[in-house]
Amino acid sequence: MSKKIAVLVRERQGDALRMAVGITLMDDTIDVYVLDRKVEETDENTLNVETIKDLGMGLYTNYKENGDMECLSNEEIALKLLEYDHIIPY
Image 1: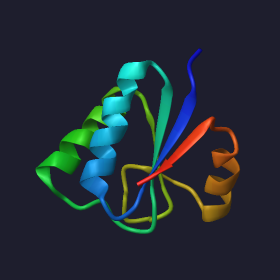
Image 2: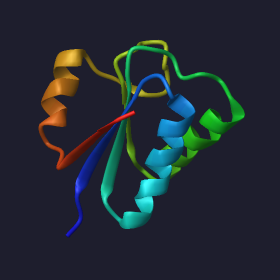
Image 3: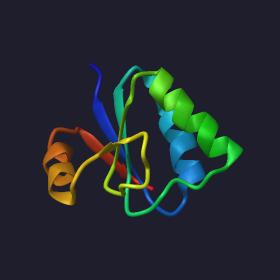
């Protein structure tokens, strides 16, 4: 039975984005939330964000300068998080 998992990305962005891509191997539904800051522009982060998009994963943020992600308010994110079986803060 597949699970619905949210990955919350904060300080360790590279590790969190890589982990979010890695756990897709389990055939669960994975969504990524980048919170409170812009994604650091590194080759690794760029590759992982592109992979997340290519895999059709949800990619959300509460930081307007993450332009290519769906921007949600903190309240909207809190309501969406109620839908998940597991929430992984990173």
